[in-house]
Image 1 (cartoon, rainbow, N blue to C red):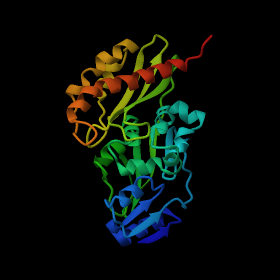
Image 2 (cartoon, one colour):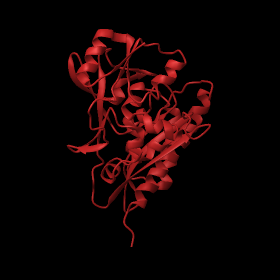
Image 3 (cartoon, rainbow, N blue to C red):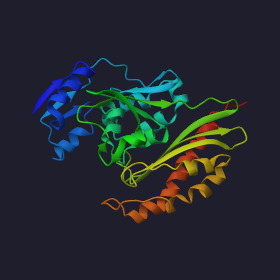
Image 4 (cartoon, one colour):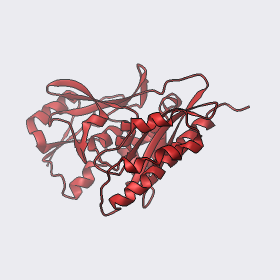
Amino acid sequence: MTYVRARSTGEVVSVLVDHGDDARILAGGQSLIPIMSAGLARPSLLVDVMGIDDHPGPALEDGQIRIGFRARHIDAERANPAVAAAAPLLPAAAPYVGSRAVRNRGTVVGSVAHADPAGEWPAVATALDATAHIVGVAGSRSVPVSELMLAPLWVDLAPDEMIVSITIPTAAYQEGHSVGAGVYELAHRRGDYAIVGCVAQAMTNTDGQISEARFSLFGLGDVPWRSTEIEDALAGAGRDDIRNVTRQIPDQITAVTDAKASAGYRKRVSGVVAARALERAFDDANSRFPTG
């Protein structure tokens, strides 16, 4: 196996063009190395991108939050107050990713590119309408992350392309409103991949009602699941109304059976998991209102 430590994205693209499917990008390595160890991937060349000069973030840029390809999970967990206020789901979701050792090395963009359907970051990106910015030999392009993910461990990237960043719209500030986030996962142990999980971000007003809600369920099937119809139904809801709205989720989803759980179990618990994440987001938003 050949190892290349790239110094620019142009060099990465050049190497990928020369080697095609035999080359793989190495960032934190917390997704790639395990599947290589299991024999599920056998690249002949690894292109290390962590030596490329980049401002990883997460950072506010032009009214959006930019997360560069070198940003680690721990960087999202420790996001500065301005970023945390604009997208509280980032620091809320990060602690659920693996162990501290994994979060210190693994990257957010790498996790999105890996597209594990039980991973937190693909679900966060789906819920928050994230956009992936991609470079390749044909130039650059931008694609909604929800459209980029096609199936488990499969994204719509050509062999010569890499994701250089993702951007997330900021939560619009409104007078008399507050934004909070919540995560709920059913897992055998904290840090394990979720059997079923949900990430949520909600805006509430001083009347105790939801002004806007976003959520995404993961661990159910091939890609994260989001329903803008249910999000719309949550507008104007109070905390006690959340479960009435999410009760319809099991009738709308499809799920898979694997060694961890049956499809039937996943469907049965999906509405409760979503409700608990949304309730946490609701409570977090209300806790941010000034007191006194």
